[in-house]
Image (cartoon, rainbow, N blue to C red):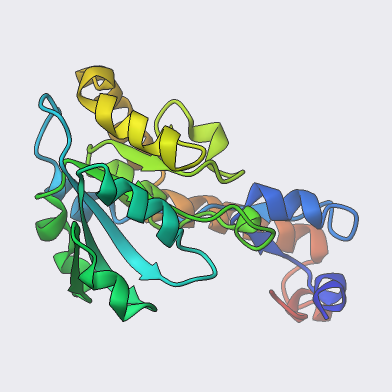
Length: 232
């Protein structure tokens, strides 16, 4: 079904470089556009440069077995960190683990008010055939807060390793968290904020619009039936 849809679409987009490579033979013209950020909204969570050891970590979004690495987070809280979770949780018993504070769902616009309390943000995804094609939508949202971001090394996060701390496995994840206050500099904070600014939704739409108009021009002039086919 995937190949059939890609074959009939005039334009196809993907938010993951891994998926772009995967479908290259079918659609060498696949457009790669990652998720963006409401930059001004998430900038409200900025509380300045981290100078003391990190203690309170935040995760926001869905936490379910297929993606979220529950075992890794158990190791993190076992090492003495507090993990506060905003969103949905597929394993209610996980919220009863000492060190885990499940805060439930909050409106998207209220997220920055909660994230202000974080010393660091975490993206503890499993590395599986499914998540290899995942670019977490929260990536640039997290970077826009100015806070350090620690994540597992998903293929699409590896190119961001100057801005996101990548920990392969629970032991490395914990070691990074323990050294955050030593690794952090005002310059690192500024560069990740600027990266997020360049990846705002406004910037994303402008790029997508430019690509669409160029592709429409390749397909045919306005009014040409070939310009109103299937879009994916």
